[in-house]
Image 1 (cartoon, rainbow, N blue to C red):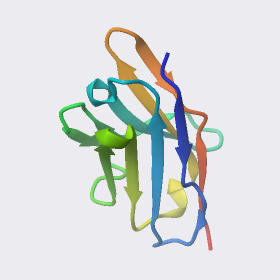
Image 2 (image 1 turned 90 degrees about the vertical axis):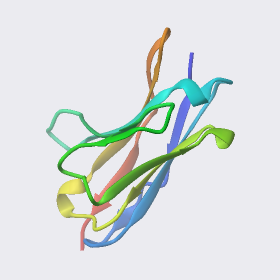
Image 3 (image 1 turned 120 degrees about the horizontal axis):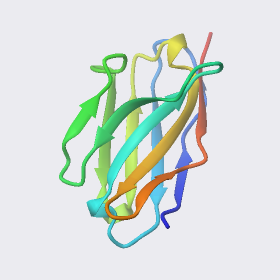
Image 4 (image 1 turned 135 degrees about the vertical axis):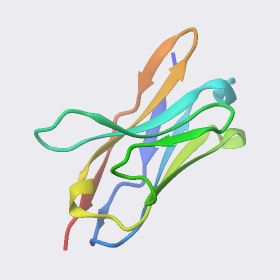
Length: 116
């Protein structure tokens, strides 16, 4: 069982920046593939960014060039730096850990609202 705790969500103006954090339990965090997902009101959850244990990153087209995912294995933490935020980035952002074997684990989510 992996426990995940997200933080950093807030209300921000369009064009602004936020950094989300997700801290995981477990002694083999370095082996987890970590991802950030988001769910806007009335929409399905979608993936935004993924980082493997080896540090390889992948981004959804909607956030590419604006968001950066990174990890600090010493702190069991994954980050999502979000720049040039748009109103359509408004969503609850979730952190996911993929552990093989073991399964997928989700955090409770953190609200990001982009509005003037």
